[in-house]
Image (cartoon, rainbow, N blue to C red; front, side):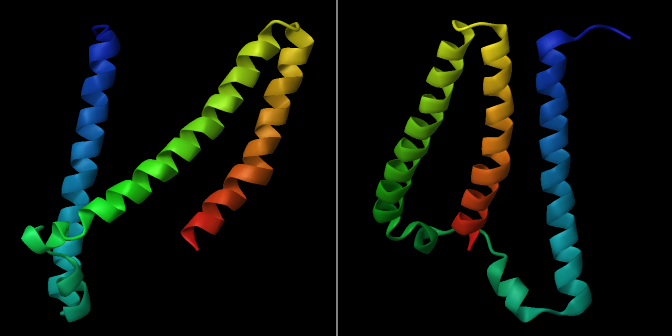
Length: 115
């Protein structure tokens, strides 16, 4: 087997995402026709001019939220970079605390966002 390197990674990612898109599309169309679900048929449509109505307000909100999330993530990255200068044991403690942050902060934050 040849070593494709980074191009192989990109190719594998492209194949995976494309097959997921095609598979989901086929499944939804099969499900709509099999169950004759009119509510799902109305929700599954191709975008048109009305789809992009009021996009400016959504884009403004999305930009503000993404800046907040980036600032939070950058703070974690700065802490990680500075923990390297304190030593191996302190860096290991930081990695452990970061794992706890994922368990006790990121999952509840995701659930609260989804709710």
